[in-house]
Image 1: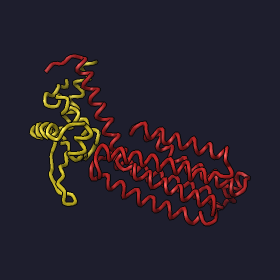
Image 2 (image 1 turned 90 degrees about the vertical axis):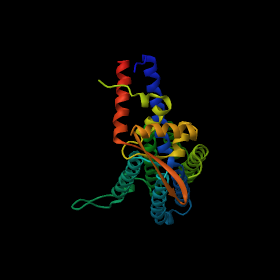
Image 3 (image 1 turned 180 degrees about the horizontal axis):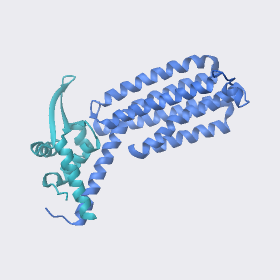
Image 4 (image 1 turned 60 degrees about the vertical axis):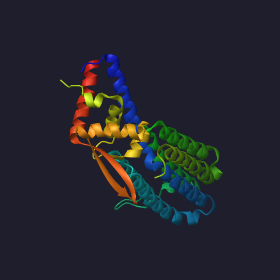
Length: 211
Length: 95
């Protein structure tokens, strides 16, 4: 069988196109539902930070655990249509990131280390509780957004725009509306995730039909 | 030297194999999702899948999920090898 270089080039382009479409489908499969869940969690958690900061400390752990469980269910449901080791690796990646965030939450709140005097985060940076809490909030909000930007390099530009957009919104809120930062995060951050999730879900259902 | 594969080279089958290769290890995709992904009609997709199955490059498994019939497509080790050979042959033509 002989083909021209142009035919070979066209075939390789078709392969690349099919690979990209399939990877995008894997990335989008579960993420619509997951983004909606985490958007709602951000909206609830940051609203609690704004209006009931003391209560928020006990609300966040339940929200995060609930979100992790709901994300796992969304991932398991999407596996029924496309099964791939990539999807499994995405799940493991989020677990590792979750552990990383939990580790930093512990380190920043640890009052002391064995044999050494230690300071809480807000004492260390010499600011009041609210400001330190906002810095923590901004830090933990940008961790998953960083992951979306990096993941978007493989799974589609949509995730790069989402991660970069919410990161910019977080920084803008932190510097320009400090008094209402948590409400800003609830509305713009949580809202962006919900809108992005709804968009992906609609696109997925229009393209592939209901799950 | 890698050889072009006449079964895989047909454009629709090339895209099917590429799509299955993108799923990496232990891949599996259902018939309707694959058809919509590659914008192929059910009849067209079915015919090409049959050709690939006869060549031993894919396996087709029918089952019921929530009382609805579903057809799952997987790539075999032979199919993965032949697809990689075909891609290598295409690249050789350009180099």
